[in-house]
Each structure stands twice: as structure tokens, then as C-alpha cells.
Length: 542
Image (cartoon, helix red, strand yellow):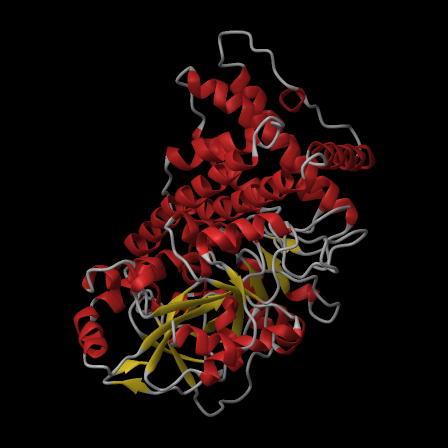
């Protein structure tokens, strides 16, 4: 086993023998075999495309399948075996439509073994072959891993958009081209840099489409107060990111007397008017970031629905109450179709729920691009008058490492004449802090999920336009935390846009070689976080 894709690897060079996320070496091998099979599907899809043939169902499936390999999404051997066989089925269906005979490579003719043990060995062999291809140049291999992990982020965003009926062939074309390129050994370091930047460009397209899917389906988010304390009554907790899964649960619990609480990255869902206004039993938010699931899920008095990442291996004390949807999976957990969530509702009614009311506490979410840009003139005027000195985007993934206390300390030290934008689960380090406002503009603005990074980018670009400058000249600093592969794709998008002086932490990716990081530092002034005081002073004095 060799895995470097998340921030919490057991040592700097990656995870061996067992994943820090809880992934077994067997699951890791099956994930590698699935990626191997998807590379074969990509080769055939490219050939089919050149003949004017497309297979939309295969395109959407391919993104879901790669998404399932993203950190903390799926731990189920059986589910990955199903994905592998389905990938080969789509590949062969496409082959049958291509008139001319093609000299296929090994990945395009791969056939899965007939037992799980043999499949796992095939996965180990595929992993060894992939690593061997990169053994000659550590920096090229570093960028190949960066592209692979960035593709997983794109696959996640594309999957969310497709769930709402929004797709774009530009995404799938690049997705296949990049997967196929991973098998090429004749590309230079500079060529891989260009592929990585192209990935950033396509990820921007993907996030734009996802933004359209969410806002055209559920309305533009509006600032909304969300209870973070429960009320008496039966309850269901839903975690992850997927708004379509949330909507299905809300539809099927309407009128049942059961309250639905968001967890983790679904907090911003309360800002969508066509969800919050239509379903009054979508009551509040319970808990914080993904790594606190063992305690928070244990204490929640009802069933729990996991829609996407980030699922942690569940404790025995609550695992019989956890249900999975979509690409999420774990051995022994009940996997449901979103069209029939009856088992969840029945369990909620049978469980005690919250037995008493507690003092109401709230946080405010919904400061996505439409809400912030609606008061852009006020914001610009506040900057010109000196009321707002600086903007900080402090956001990204959360995690369990003690070093992540940096982000809360940083926010605590930000002067009172500065505004903090935040997004993703990193905000749970400080999301309930009372930071006040500047002339009616809240000092803490929750832009949304990691899936809503497009909103943050559009806010920055609009402010730059208002000041007739570029983003790098704005009084804006980006202090980002990363954990998994969506963060990789977002970082590549920011670099594609030419944004400089990003501070990244809490540690640097294990898959980024020293030379590659030096190249990025020279070209974009990308840098690792240091201390809150030193970084804050550098940002304010630049």
C-alpha cells in the first residue's frame, strides 16, 4: 500500500500498510485497480470521441467511481468490486460502437479477476506499475500524483452537479485526457505543469457548473440564522455535501414530526431559500467538522445519513444508526437509494430524539457571492473610507492534527477593522465566534461549503474589478487549510488564475516534491503557514 493523497498521512512520505483515514490495504488496492480500469475506459472514450461517439451515462459513472476513491468516501471492498466491473462494462460497450479496429494498450484490455483475492492482487500490481513508471523522475511523478488527486476533486464536483442534471462535455473531455496522460512516460516536467494548470482551469468550469446547478435549483443563498442547539423532538442527522440527497430526505420526512439537522459541510444548505423556506422541519445544525464524528454521532439521539465524504470508520456504539447514500460506503453499514429513505424515518420515530429544549444559540450562513456582491458598493466604500483595512479568506478543510489550532488563533488575532471570509469545514474552528460588524457588514462571512469555492473566487474577482485592479493588488490574503483532493483542485484553480501569496497548511502535501514546491513558490509565491502572528503581520504589511 502506498497512499499520499490526504494531509493526514501517517508520515511525511505517505501511508503504508494501513491508511490514517482507516482505509485497509485491501480497499486501497481495489481503489488503485478501479483507477487502472478507469484509465482504460478513458482511452476508449477518447477513441470514441474522435469518431463522434459519446456515452453520457458512462461519463457520469466515471466521475462517481473516481469520486468514491477520494479520502473518507468509501471503505467497502464489495462496492469497489462492483465499480470495477461496471467500468469494464462501460468500456466494452463503447468499444462495440467504434467501427475501426484500434491497437489498445494494456489498460484498455484489462479484465478483472474472478475472486476478490485475485482482484486485490491485480490492484497491488497496478499500483506497483504506476509507481514504477514514476521512479525515474521524482518531480514528474510528484506532478502526476498532483494531477490524479486534482482529478478526484473535479470528479467530486462534477458528480454533485450531475446529480442535479448539470453536465458539460468539457469536463469529461479533460477528465479522460488527463487519465490517459497518467500512463505516458514521455512527458516533461513542464508539460506536467501545464496539465496541472489546465486542470485548474477545468476545475473552475466544473465549480461554475456546480454553482449554477445549486443556485438554479435551490435559489441563491441568503444570510440565514441557523440554530446550533437542538429543540425537543425526533431527529435525523445528515452529513456530507450533497444537496439533492438532503432534499430527498426533507421531502420524505415532511409531515412526519421528525426534525432534520445538518452536520459538517451541510450547514450552508440552510441558506438556500428553496430548502429552508419550503421545509420548516429542516431545523438546525448539530456538531462541527468531520473528525469529530466519533463523539458527535455517538451523542446524537437519532439515525445519521452520510451523503458524501467525509465518513470516518464508525464506532460500534453508533454504527447501526448510520446509513450511506450514493458513492459513500462502509462494510456493514446500510446503503440506501435516496428514493426510499423509509428505514431512516422509521428509526427516527422509534428513537427518543431530543427530550428537552435548550437555550437557543445560532450562527449565520448564506454569505455566498450573490449576497456579498449585492452589497459590494457598501463594501468598496468602507474600504475607501478606511473602515475596512483588509480581507482574509481563512478556509478549507479541517482535520485532527494539533497544528490546525493555528487557524483559530489566526482569526482571534485579526484586527477589528478587518473582515474574514470563510468556507468549508475549516470554519468550524471559529464559526460560532462573535466578531461583530463594520458598519453593518459582519466581520465573519460564511461563504459556504468547499463546493462553493467558486463563490469566494467570484467575490475576489468582483472586488478587484470594482477597484480597477487585479486580485493580487487587493487588500486580501488567503490563508488556506487542506486535507483532501478537492482542496488540491481548488489550489490549482487559484494558481491557474494567477493568484499569488497563498499561505497553505497545516503541512505541505506529501506528494509535492521539494523541487515542485520551489517552482510554485518562485512562480506564485506559494508558501507554508508559519505562526499566526508572523503571517498576520506579513499580510497586513505587504
